[in-house]
Amino acid sequence: MPNTLHSLRIVAVAGLALVSTTSAWALAPRTEKLLWNSVPLAITVPIESETVLRLPTACEVGVSAGLGGELSVESVNNVVLLKPSAAFTKKRIALRALSGNQVYLIDITATKSSTHDSFELIDPALTPPVAEPESASESLPESGQESGPDSGDVRIALTRFAAREFYAPDRLRGGLSAVRTRVVETPVELYRGGSVRAIPRAGWAYHQHSVTAVELVNLTPDTRELDPRLLRGAWLTATFQHGVLSPAGTQGATTMVYLVSSAPFEAVQ
Image 1 (cartoon, one colour):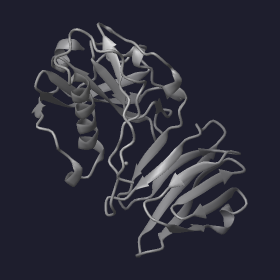
Image 2 (tube, rainbow, N blue to C red; image 1 turned 45 degrees about the vertical axis):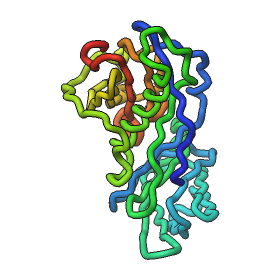
Image 3 (cartoon, one colour; image 1 turned 180 degrees about the horizontal axis):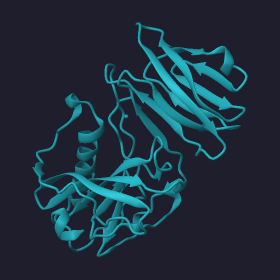
């Protein structure tokens, strides 16, 4: 989470319901961000399918002898392609940077039920990209409740600001004179259906707008595609950091949603 930001798409909402002009966002491939903090990183990949692992620098791949018959590994520059031929649990590969002495350790589990995602390893010691949230759809036309002709730009700026606060290194945070607001970090009934736990983690105010970062956690053993229409509240925009949650207790079972509103979180949730 290259420094070039991907295009940001945001869902606009009116009243108590989120409205989306398309559901195609849920079908887009999801890239799981892996933040290197000097401990082995765990990923789950599907068997008989090729999974892409992007690295912050070109690496050579070390695979244990016992894993050679179960996992096909191809490496090109800073991209590694992984294709398991059978299910296995927690097999480790080592990725050694071609420049310097850095070694990244990845513990791989292969299953039939795994979703087909790609992964991107982020090393804060190198020049990292800024996390760019995934989103549900393009912005809808502005409603009469929104303030000023630049309202849409403010929403995008607030969403990116909140995402950087959680996913970017310290030197890339800030950039907006938003004021931190108090949120109560206890579960709220934000996502309908009871399958996803929601906990507000941080909030900011900027002129007539507020943005709240809410942690979403999958409580079920199934992969969940996040649906913006299931969010309770009068949000101007809602943007998921990831559009899909992995099963409870696995890598990727937690993500963030950034909610922009015309009033503080408690007043519109």
